[in-house]
Image (cartoon, rainbow, N blue to C red; front, side, top):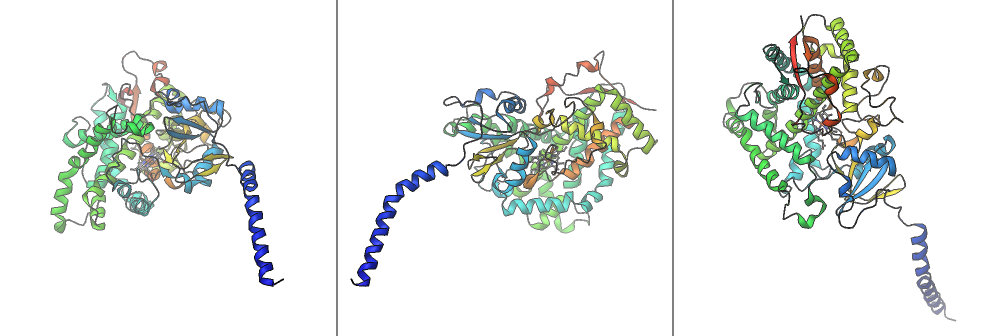
Length: 498
Ligand code: HEM
């Protein structure tokens, strides 16, 4: 037989064999190479899924559900799949092993992403870790958070704390709201670094300061409110809760908050003095107004409330735990003596650092971190996390887990004294600033301004609860709503310590 004919017959046979085998191969692939299932979770009801199981304090609800369903759990909120990591191992998988796939940002429909530029203007709302996001983080690191930048702001932070002390001295015997005082101080630390001026005032809300506080509070409130448009995109246009409309109005108000400063700076740039603040640095790079507005709003929003809440919680815990308060005062007396607390004292105050760490453990300002987004499908701990799932890490649940912490619900700063645990994103049982690519870029600043203000409060003032309220009435459970405890801020009465 002609060799060409033989070859042609063999090819035809092979083709026919392959054709016959194909269905078997497909069946085998389905049996043996089936993608792993979704992480376990509570039964999702038709249409609503697990929405009814969420409620007001989702971190607490999710902590309870994780006890039943395990450290990697999935829930369905309407059409949206949510995956929650609630153990150090699961957190490490999400934020380290699969950091690249899971470090997108889930953006609620209340954020007006219709602005197509937002993905390229924003750090917090950058949907992926794109080049602009990297550049923005690098600019912030260089101008604000590097060792050198932090050192150049020491005098500014200490000056703002001195003003806080002077104000508090005039309030002796009166009831003050701790959160408001700290918030004003931190806002002014930031606004001086950004614009070389105060934007907030302790007494008078002022035009800019009042509007800015309102903007920051609203920003957090919208972020924390579950939005039905996220779970049923089909309802997006209806905006049943009105959140999208209010949020859009809020974003439009941003420019008016500091537009005069920006306008003036642009017109007077040629005769600026040698003083270079953050705004000047952004103008030098050639940033447009909308870029400047977005980055500054995000830094105010992410930096002011988180740090103020941490000081407020630490003060509340110290009032309830007088032993810890006495120990902290003893340390301050010994190391700082009669003088005001300076940043140079901070590395020599281990008990103070332990109090801040313990406040951040029990009361992390972002108990579920910020929502991440799965940029691609990946397999984690034997389960599939589909692309576009919303990813949360429940650090609040981890902080209350008796398998991780001894006596987890008690405020015991001592637990950090002989421990190397730190919040820099390497110890996954303790990540109040997050970990991986999306770790908080303001960690170094937060880690300085919080202990400085707390130490000043404790060193220079005595504190009592108003009227005949006693510390047992500081009901911590009532305070679970971490963002914006407007209804129940901590009120205390200062007295100058002799
Ligand atoms: C006690 C103080 C603070 C705490 C506990 C804190 C915590 C956090 C957490 C948990 C995240 C989310 C991480 C994630 O997505 O996984 C975050 C993000 C962020 N924080 Fe902080 N933060 C604090 C202070 C600050 C300060 C002082 C600034 C700046 C002035 C700041 C700026 C930011 C920004 C811009 C992001 C978004 C990062 C990104 O998406 O890439 N934070 N922070």
